[in-house]
Length: 579
Image (cartoon, rainbow, N blue to C red; front, side, top):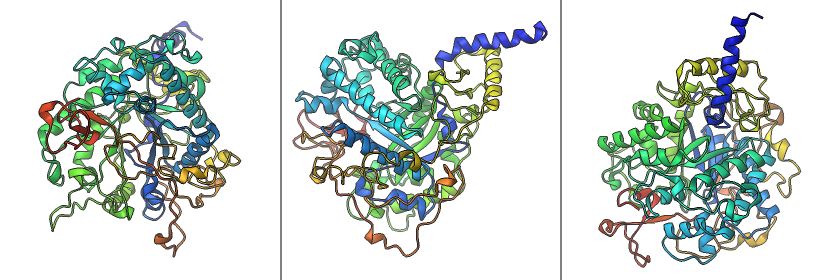
C-alpha cells in the first residue's frame, strides 16, 4: 500500500483515539430510528391501558417508564419485577425506562429531617447511605443486563437540580464544589473517584460500563428556571462524564396553566427552546421530555400541525413520555392541578387520556422525521431499539452532528470503533467520522433475540406482565410495592399510584417475528374482548412526586396546607418561584 494511502488512515485512527473518550457508549438516536418517539408511564392504576393503546389503537410506544425507589423486598423479587416490566415494554416494541430516584427516599427512610434539598444533601455526604445507593444502582444495572435488550436507566430527577440551585449556591455550575461521598463510601466499584458531584456522575457511568454495558444512561437536566441560565446546566454536566441522553421534566409554556388549551406563550416558548438547544448541543446528545402532561402537550404537539413539534425536535428533542395516572377509567385520566381543567364547550382540545391516545395513534401512522438541526438528523439515527445489546449501537450517517455513528464497542471495547462529538471539531473530525461510518457499514448488526425467549425461565415471570403479585402476597398491602417508600412520608399528590401493570397473561407476537421494526403494525387484539373485564394488578402504592421549597414571595395558589416550611412546588410547577 502506498504511504500516501496509509497516512490518512493513521491520522484518522489517531484522532479516533483522541476523541473516543468524549463519546457516549450508545447513540440513542440509533435506538429511536429515523423519527421522534413517544412513550408513557407504566403505573398500574392504568392497568393494561398502554398495551391496549398499542394493540388496539396502533400507538407506537418507543418508551415505557416507571420509578424504581428504595425497597425492603428481597433481591430476587426486585429482579423478577423489573424483568417483567422489561418484558412488557419489549412486547410493545418499546424501550423500558427505569427512573432511578433514590437519594431523597433513602434519606427519608433513614429518618433524615429537613427540606427535600436538605435531605438529599445529607445523604450525599453520608458514607453508609451512599454505599447503599451504589448497591441499589448496581442491582438495577445487573437486572437490566439479564434481559438482553436495551434498557434506559434515568438517574435522579430533581437531585441534580437541587445540587445546582438549592445547596447554598443559586445557579452552581461547578459540580466539583458539591461534596459527595463517592470513593469514601467504601463501595469497592467506585474506589478512586473524587468525592464530589462530578465524581458521582463519573462513577455511575463506570458502574454501567462494568455491570451492564448495554444499558443506556440518562442524566436528568432540570429546567428549574424555565429556560433561563442554561449555562448552569451545561457547566454542571461537563463534569459528569459521557452519558447517553439527557432527560428532563415537562416545559412551562403557559402563562395561565388553567387555560392550557390556549396558544403557548411565545416568550416562554423561545426561552425554553433556547435552553433546550443549548444543553443538547453542549452535551452532544438528544433530550427526552419525561413526565409530560396529558392535555396541553398532546394538544399543542400532536394535534396535526407539526410546526411546533418540528421546532422542539430541531432544538434537540428526541422523544416525549407522558405521565398516565388517576383513578377510575384510565380513558378519563387528566393531568393534575390546573392542567386538568376541562376546556370550554366547542373546543376540540379534549384533555383526557383517550384524546391523547387518538392523537398519538394518528401520529404513529406518520411520525415526524428528524428536521434539519436535530441532533438525530445530524447523527443519521436510523437504527432499531432491538439491535445492539452490548457496546455502542452502530450505524448512522455521520454528518459532523451530535452523535455520529459508532463502530461498536463504545465503553466496553468489544469491537473497537470511534464515536465523534462536535466538540472535537475540524477536518480531522470529518475524517474520523467517515472512518466510523465505514466501519459501521461493515459491521454486522445483530438482532436481539425475542425478549420472551430471553426471559423464559426467569424466576416467577411465567408470562405475566405484573411482577410480584404471585411471588410476594404482602405487596397487595398499601405501601408495599417496589416503587415506593415504606416510611409513609408526606406526598405532594395523595393519590394511589400502582406500578405493576396488568396482571393478565401477556399476548406476545410469535418469537419468529423478532423485534418489531419501526413502522410495522402490531397484531390486533382478539376481537370481542370486554375491556371492562381487564384484570388490574393488586399491588397498591403511591409514587412519590417530589416537591421543591418555594421562596416566601412565591406562596399563593400552589401552597399546601400543613406542609412544613410553607408552600411547596410540584415538579409540574417548578421554575415559577424557584428552589
